[in-house]
Length: 297
Image (cartoon, rainbow, N blue to C red; front, top):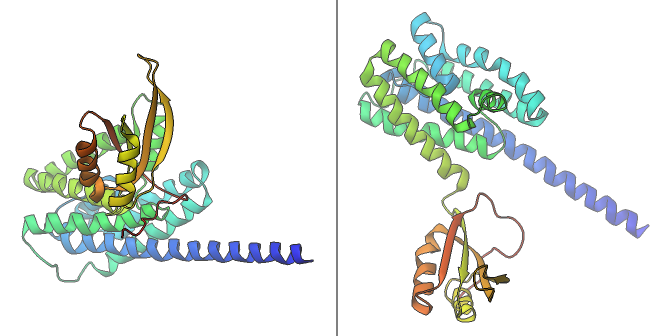
């Protein structure tokens, strides 16, 4: 009986967590889509600056036809809802449908709102930042606001090009078309806005406290490990290694730090063993274990 009650409690707890995650996904997908709409309608479109992907095509078609931008964004993404459902999953497809729907409605509602600035450089920079924040939030919570990525994944299976290369080729075509429609100055500003948005998306997805892994090989591994624990408050793990050339046993220090702590880690290693081997790499995600920083007294 007690065991059944405990199991029931665990199931209820799991359902609570699932509902919380579902609410977070819906909430942040809506917020991200609204932010992208703000970046597009209040910064980029009034100054004839484009984004890449399906949104870029929609902006060109809307300009040429006079049909509202939100209608094109929704219609052109319809095939990708189905493809996303078949290739990636129901949850992703529904998140994408929600995001695209909110984005389309937002662009329609904001179409006649006075713009923030008519300065091309300011519109490019802040439009790219706001758009990038919006897209980054949606991607971070498991959705998408553009079907280009899904299309690139499908093409990647049949052609010897990476997903990134396919998206790049696709966007080059869009910006080249923008040059003929809006002029080459606007096309170049569009490239700048796209680059700013791309970098902003990276920051939003990874977070300002982006994690890094550090691998250190040193004869003074104990001193370095103790110093990392005492001065950075980070736990370390000692791994056993063997030199391929010499056959000597080696101790390898492994730890996870934030990018802000990288410089301090390097100074610790340099101070205790200038000849130590040090490799630092970015980590997309850290879960479990004892990554939380310990208090330094």
